[in-house]
Amino acid sequence: MPRVPTASALRRALFCALLVGLVAALSAASALAAPVGGKFQVRHVFVLVLENESAAVTFGPDSPAPFLSQTLPTQGAFVPNYYGVGHASLDNYVAMISGQAPNPSTQADCGVFADFTASGLGSFDQQPGSGCVYPADVTTLPAQLQGANFTWRDYNQDMGADPTRESATCGHPVVGQPDHTEAATATDMYATRHDPFVYFHSIIDNGSLCNSHVVNLSLLPKDLSKVSSTANYSFITPNLCDDGHDATCANGQTGGLTAADAFLKTWVPKITASRAFKEDGLLMVIFDEATGGDSSSCCGEIPGPAAPEPGGSGPGGGRTGAVFLSPCIVPGTVTNTAYNHYTMLGSVENIFGVSHLGYAGLPHSTYFGTDIYRRQCGPSPPKVTGGRASIDGTTHAGKVRLSVGWRISTAGGTPLAYAQLQERVHGTWRMILKRTQRTSYAFTGNAGQTYRFRVRGVNSAGQVGKWSPSSVSGTASPHS
Image 1: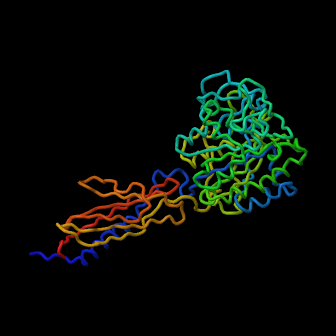
Image 2 (image 1 turned 45 degrees about the horizontal axis):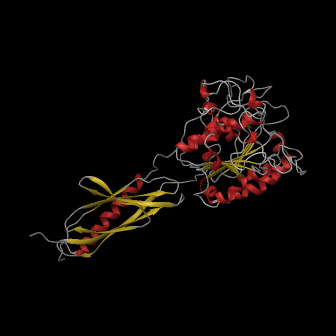
Image 3 (image 1 turned 90 degrees about the vertical axis):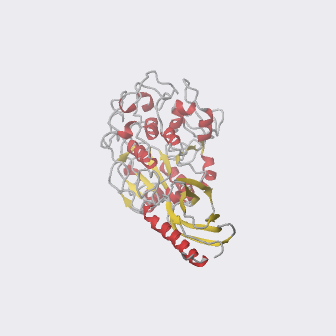
């Protein structure tokens, strides 16, 4: 008669079988559908747009913005060859979230909030003709993000400060009517033309969407207080004083780069201190266009179907320079690679694994790479680092009480959201624990039966580790 193992022997064999199975599976752990970016996994993008300055002034030796020109580049990456794509303001903002090229109306900043008269999309899905409010069939970055289960929010300083001018949410003129926010007032310096989101029918025609996503800047601090409430993509527009547009502000304060620098001193630390930024953030401080008659371009920019000269007197919006901050960026980085609003949009789309819109997909475009990202950061998939198994005792009628446990590591990545445990039953994996914070599972099994389990982790960024298969087997006697 064959020898029946003792309970202690079975306990040791069971423990070893599970532990070896779990540890051996570690090398196979990987992210589920990891988006473009490899080890540089940015998941929270902040775009902060300032106004109307050339790189030579902003970042020159006599810059009136020392925080922007001197302090921030030492904390992140200086991008001296960043370019606008047109003149004046609105065409640049529109390009940042849609890849649509300048047209005569957006080049003139749309004094009247007018619809397009032409229909149908051309090459690179460009909207033909001249107009301001793009038809619903023109796709935007927000639509892409929503389709990929990412979140977005657009923050505008002073929006709704004077409710007789515009609403506090989704603030814009009536379609077909003049834009009364073209000039600032002492009490309200919001400018519609610096808020590209309201120039798309796909956004403004959905009242609940627009009112909940196009909001006042005052909501940003609360949103930053938790990772779960921080949008994956945040667009930040200061008012006409704090973005540097007005040399003398409507309320009498000094404007220009001095005001912009003060705004950055206040708001950049709020963003970089947030947990979302610290884990996997990217903050881009950019300008819409250059001044001083600079209509130069980069990156293979081509004109749209309605504007042969995007810069009015030249092919682009001029060289503005930019500064990027991120835990993925080594402080003090300088890249000489040229970028513009189109390739910035394409780079953001790469981060979230969505396709390139409009001129963000021009041939031979260069997107952010290791010239900027030089340090591993952001989410990494959870990894099972160990396990245990034990027999807690015997019951009766050939039953034994067993338990399995596991350890999941998120070192260097986003915190664990939950674990999942499956058991293989009759050749099929069956979910035992779907969303659990537990680290063990106890059950009553049959003596002499083989049990197979596997476990994986899911982090708060949505990354899923591979299943770590494990076998638990042995022969036990209810009388041992």
